[in-house]
Length: 389
Image (cartoon, rainbow, N blue to C red; front, side, top):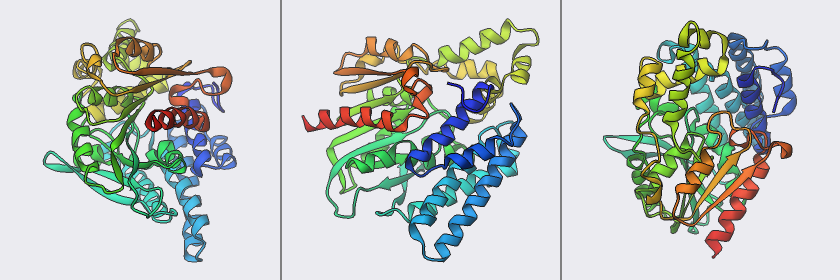
């Protein structure tokens, strides 16, 4: 679904940024005027122009806050956070040494933290115990009544950030009476940047401590904890649910059967291309980003090591361990995991349902970017019915 660019990756990321307008995370005019200053495939211009827009909108938010305009400040700071995240997206050649990448990530975190404090029920920043360290998280509450409510445990995927998780799911959940504990696991957001934690295939080792923590939260209904994972999180959440059985339900957004297959297919493509992976990366924005982001988040040196490191990222022989009701989402034109939701559904032995999102309804892109309301409507209507029963 082309949006502003012929470059598939630029089109998708622009749509992703714009789609958060549904929950005050973007304004369409700001997206349009930013993107029209960015040439096709120009990653330097992408970072510079999105950073400039983010800074301009942050100033609006800071001025509004100083003047006592709480709602205006919150909305502007949410947009700034999303734009800073977008500005940093392609800066993956060497993030550890990229001071501008670090600055943009920190600005996205700080503007979101300041916006979260201005929510009608301010969000609580958390550190969830994990092995010998902690994971960053936010607790989003419907209200301050202390009433136990169904609670989502939510993480993203290959490139999500904790701050984005509010716009991607939590905002829609709060409107429907769900509390949310959103968190970054290893390899995600600040955990890889600030703690040096990398992705791991045995994601139950991440989710079980989060469930343990949720059970100490008075506002979390222990009988109605729901795990949700987005993008690569569709594998991670499924893997965790196969071993962690204190969940009332699991939502895979979207279903992912085997991450290794995707990486191995890329390696095969590179092997049949003159010049190999370097030639592919030089001419394809999406391939370049996948490899660079994988080097960083998986803690490997290149594509060959990525292939080896992802061998265990599969639900083969594991899917039948999921016992809770599971919703598998599917996107008609998914450019990363096409066909995998159906494969996973076939292997599930629990109560299960597949919901497919089509291109002709504006929802066929990976994770239904650009169709936030439809994604939330179908997902939460399913959860409402399940948990009420």
